Image (tube, rainbow, N blue to C red; front, top):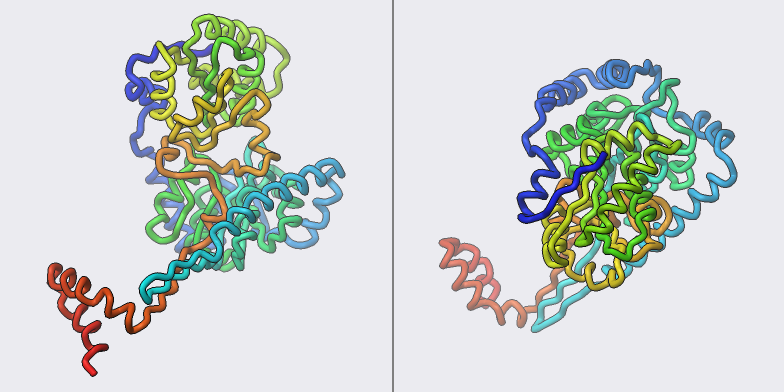
Length: 427
C-alpha cells in the first residue's frame, strides 16, 4: 500500500516523489473559461458552475437571509470552536504586525520610515467539493482583517443544493465578511481578477484550490497579485527508532484524507521503524476507517517511506523535498528542525500533529506546496500589506551623498539624475 525507497541521491528521489513538472494540458480549458468570464460575465459563471459543479444557481451572491439561516444549522460547539480558532489566529497575526510597525532609520540627515499600508481589496478562495473548509476561510480572512484590508470577497463552490456550507457561512459572518459568492473553480478566479456585474474585481487573490483554480491563478497573475500556487496537501514525518508507529500512521492518514493526490511520507534512518510502519498501515487500513477509499488511494499513489543511511542524508532529503508540513518525531526534534530550511511549517514533538495546526494552534494552514517552501512562507498578515518607505532628507543629508550620486549617475549614463540633485545647491 505504500512505497519504500532507499535514498541515495536526495535530489533524484525527491523529483521521483513529486513526479512531472510539465504544464497541464488543461491550461487551454482554463484559458477559455477565463476569456468567457471576461466576455460574458455572470452568465459564464452560471454556465460553468452548472457544467463542472453540476449545480444550477439562480443567484451568485449569498444574501443576508441565507447567512442568518446558516446559524440554525450550526451547533453551539461548532460556533465556539470557530471563535476559538479565530481568536488564536488573530493573536498570532497581531503580534507579527505590531513587531513590524514603527520601524524608522535616521542617519546623517536622512530619515526613512517604513510604513505598512493595507491592500485595498482581496478575494479569498475557499475550496468546497467533497469536503468543507470553514477553517480555510478564517486562515485567509483573519490576516486580511488584521492588516486593515478594506474589502474582502469570499468565493466558494456551492453544494449540490446550490447553497454554501452553513459552517463556512457562519465562519464568514463572525469574521465580518460582507461579500460571499457561491462560485468556485477557474470561473471564480476570473471573476475576482476581471470583475463581473455581480462580483467586483479585487487587487489580490489568496487561498488554495484544485487544479483548475491553480492554473487560473497562474494565468491571471500577470493582471493581478496572487499569494501562491498551492498544490495538494503534503506531509513529511521525520521519525526515529523511538517514534510511536501509531502516531506516525495516524498523522499520515489525517492529511491523506484530504484528497487522492496528497503526498504523505516518512523519512527515517531506522529499518526497524520502517517495518513497524508497514505493519501498522496494513492494520489500520483494514479497519473501519472514515474516508478509507480516499486514504487508500492516496497512500497507493503517493505514500512512501524513505530510508536514509544517516541523519545528514535525511535532512538533505527533507530540504530537497521542501514539504508543506514537516513533523519531527524524534528524541531531539530541535536539533533536526534547526537544520531544516525549506518546510512550510515545522511541528516539533509528538504533541504537535499537523492536524492540530490545520485548525486551532494560531498558525496559518495556507502553506507553500510543490517546492515553494524553498522561497515562500505561510499566508500571513504580510500578504495583505505593502511596505512603503517615507523618506525625508535635510539639505545636509542630500549634500552628504551628492558626490556618490554623481559617480553612479554618470557611470550609468544618466547624468540628469545628478543634475536634479546639483540644482538644489546652486544658490
